[in-house]
Image (tube, rainbow, N blue to C red):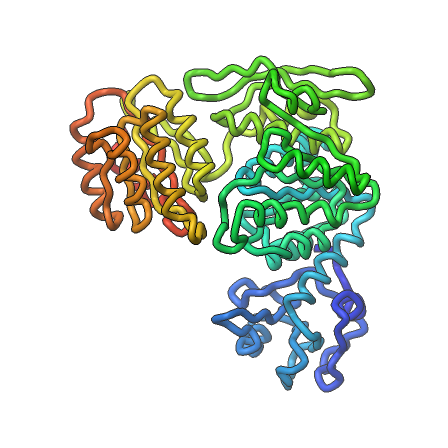
Length: 486
């Protein structure tokens, strides 16, 4: 984070300096780090006292001072009276955090910002685009990207606060579970290029319907810079609606497609042709970019498996092209990225057993994409699934559809764990007219069944593990690696 003065903080957050707190000479004081967590405070930090449904950091202000915070940002109505730190009062600390993040971004000269949203693939697109931009800059220190899942109204400002003067690009994820959230966070990011990667049945509990998801994700384009570029996945649901909306607003946009011989493919500015998959499901293809009535081409080989990652690579390539990257930059960046944590990471444990970790999160569309990948393997295919969360009234149908699809794609064995995933088991067994799927109420019972199953397995097997973040299915991946490695 760049250094900012007390006056800067007050200006950015519309805050006022509390006179009784000026025991430290505030005129000469600067801050170069912000914390919202007393466990991570360092000396001379600015501590922002956030509040939530089950916490109020105003109760920890003494702890913040003891840990070394030199400036406290608090809400006026809390009537804070403390010594040992400069106190700045604002109406709402959560809003103030966002304003401060936007202020820092605006201080970085010539910074280009790319914003990414969508139901699936946000993090993979972010990592692919970051890899391309690093190839373009020749220096990883010139590219800032969202860390972990810092993609909401708190995480996005904290990401912007990490910006330094050397940064030329910022790549940020924008997530949401309700209407209006992306309108707010994109207003803070003010992107130069913005992507809606896809619209799938995720967070339906908060959005109410797939149409609600589409409306929420499209908010990302409402705060593009005046010369900004929208990026549209022409293969995705609602693509036609999005294109019409952007055309009506006279918004510049680029579209991409991986579906050859379809109209959306013909209309695409960026598209993949000659797509081929190796025995591990990893794709190679020809990347095509239309530019000034000429189609430029270059060959790409991905280290990430699955058809869905071809689409993610096209999304990243389109954004990179909009940001001024060359085809060689794009090729190098796509070819270089090895894996993304918790997303279809394959590990060969023995000559007979491979595990694929796709546990970061799940909705029915991402589970089906994982099933498509698993179905490409020419051996015994085992799927282990936890519950899919935040589906609201759609939860039963979505879990059933996963079980039916697993049978349709000839998955040999299905293990499920949790309360809702039992519906997937029942649907699989009904479709197959067998007991090829087994359900368990908890992970301990699942682990016992897996031990018996893999102990007796004699043929080459690939196991894919999937589930929502709340299901913590990475525990199952760890169990498999710890117990069945050669």
